[in-house]
Amino acid sequence: MVTPAQVVDAYGRRFTYLRVSVTDVCNLRCVYCMPEEGVAWLPKDEILSYEEITTVVEAAAAVGVYKVRLTGGEPLARREIATLAGMIARVPGITDLALTTNGLLLGKYAADLKAAGLKRINISLDTLNPEKFIQIARRGRLEDVLEGIAAAQAAGLAPIKLNMVVLGGLNDDEVESFAAMTLERPLDMRFIEYMPLQEAKDCALGSGSFGFVPNTVTKERLTRRFGTLDPLEVGNSMRGPAEVWRIPGAAGRLGFISAMSAPFCAKCDRLRLTANGELRSCLLDGGGVEVKSLLRGGGSTADLVNAFRQAAALKPELHKVWHEIPASAMSRIGG
Ligand code: SAM
Ligand code: SF4
Image (cartoon, rainbow, N blue to C red):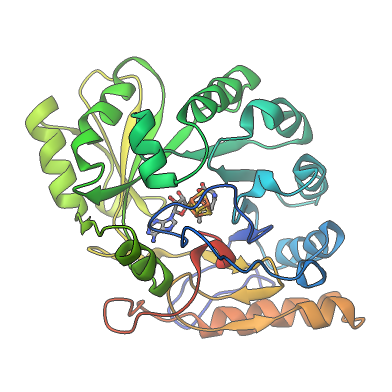
């Protein structure tokens, strides 16, 4: 049921989910996300403080948001991220707090995050091969991510979702190995289509390009290997952006996020807060509403609520990324 306070746009989409980019900084340089060198981070004084982020989340809760995801950049690269998790977990109305990470620092922070009130975690991992890890992420060690996954499991942050961006000619030969991990373990594996944002295209060109792989191809490949998959959340029963299937008898599940080949804009229930205080209507398109000046200039909760309504109104009916590539960095907006 929609209450009067909730934000519903002209296309009937109700906003219940806020993704918060807590920093644009990252300790990796994935080929599809950032250039290898020379990334100019935002000046520190432009980054929202934990108190400012919490104020925005409180306003979000007032308009019906109950789900928050912390992302980045790399959220664990921001100092004392568990403190922010605790502040958000205490906001009345926020019942689902999640985080997306590259997993490198999870070994250190998983238990603190769980204790602070984090409910769920997504860990991005594009390869199970240590050399390929360096080729794709350009920094860090696969070993540390695997330790991070184990620490998240031990801390009770289950079920864990693993995100893999499928890159033609680079890691698409590993989709079967990733899917096989769900046979015995209750993992949610997510196969994500590469999105050609402007920076991502530049990065890809600078590092030896890779091909776009539609999820139909990945799914066919998995069907050939594991047999017909069982549908769990498909078509009208889809609750999120992923179509979810299961290898018959497997403990875990397989999700396909097909933002490019089958956009899920009609069901999109999310708005985004960037690290430097802009409420974005969409990752790929549309515009945003600047809220940092409201936060720093004595704006009221009513002003923030109004900013949410304005941001929702900017949301495009369908993103146009195939036609007009936006020059917006995934790591700044929060992928
Ligand atoms: N650093 C964290 C991580 O990697 O999980 C959080 C931020 S990252 C921008 C969030 C997600 O966006 C990751 O799963 C990453 O693989 C994905 N991503 C980044 N650039 C992408 C692109 N061009 N196309 C598709 N997914 C992308
Ligand atoms: Fe960093 Fe995540 Fe982008 Fe990789 S995808 S460079 S880990 S922000």
